Amino acid sequence: MVSAAKETFIQKYPDAKNMERSFCPYRICPLGAHVDHQYGLIAGFAIDEGIEMFYESTDDGLIEVLSLNMDGTINFSIYDEKILLKRDWADYLRGAIVSLKRRYNLTKGIRGVLYGSMPIGGLSSSAAVIICFLKAICKVNNLHPSSEEVIDIALYAEKDYVGVNVGTLDQSCEILSEKDRLLFLDTRTGKYEVIPQSKKMPEYEFAVFFSGVPRSLVGSAFNMRVDECKAAAYALKGFSGMEYGKFDDTRLRDVPKEVFDKYRTKLPKNWRLRATHFYSECERVEKGVEYWKKGDIIGFGKQIFKSGDSSINYYQTGSPELKALYTIMLETDGIYGGRFSGAGFKGCCMAIIDPKYKESINKTVTEKYLKQFPHLKNAFSVHFCKSAEGVKF
Image (cartoon, rainbow, N blue to C red; front, side, top):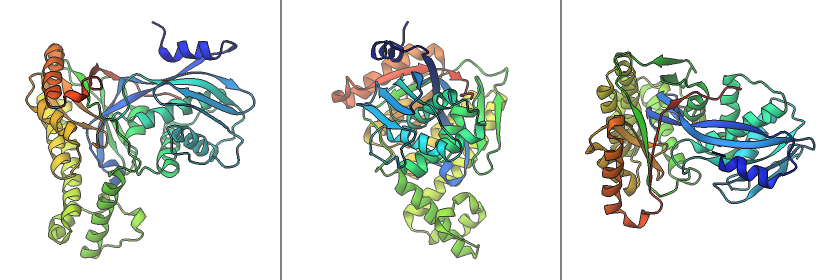
């Protein structure tokens, strides 16, 4: 079956002489919600769906990319002195070039077609677009950055250029993951393990439930939550007499949990709630990793459900649609665990499931969800996927 991106590329560029393909998987993070920007612990997978691009190099440095998911074709040059934000989807590509040029000299551009195999929102599609594009640009310029470099380059593009206060969760899962292994990452130190599944582990797959309501992090409450976490950390340092330096450099991971336990009642309510989520989520990651090592998928799934509950009650994310999906997942046979995927502001939910229940899960979740939100019938969708390899440069 010819992919939509490939077919469109052939039609758009009939004169192409050296078509190539780039691919970056989406990621799923069952545990480690909302903590990477505070240098917390995360556990995640790459999945076998993602962003692909068919392209060929341009000798004049031109970047021309059509997205089949978003409107419009991007046009700019790697030689432009100032590559300015336009506040559209292509800012992620502009940011990738700006970030890459901080480290490497570029001489070739690309023309190509991008396509995401799932609806956008909650699977780190922005990071996947950046990394897919970076892989193509690096290929035509004969560049071979390390995995750590790619993570840093992609992070700069999204955080410093586009302006979303993300951490390294998305980029790390999409680069470092290995099929059928759980990525366990300390986002403060960058140290990680890819943990094989136990021989006792039963079969499992992932389900992704798209609410039908698209998500955007820029201008959402996402950045506000990040600031609330940092404010809590800054205040706790002050209360306890710790050195606190610059606000921008402050993270909750800097503050021992014992300090939080001692001074938590001094924090404003919202700051206290965000910190409560952070410390409890890091504990859930560690517990989840132990369940994974033992092959206890039921225990692993329960931690995911607890993460979802904490996201709602302490981190206070979740649209009415996502909260409804979370409640439905709790009541559906064959779902070991599930929660919001991504930032939790609209978008989708993910679940780890027993494959034997796929048909009934699809039917039950769809019927119950659309009973509450019938106007989303043509936008809501269910997808099943498996773990996959991360991107190799």
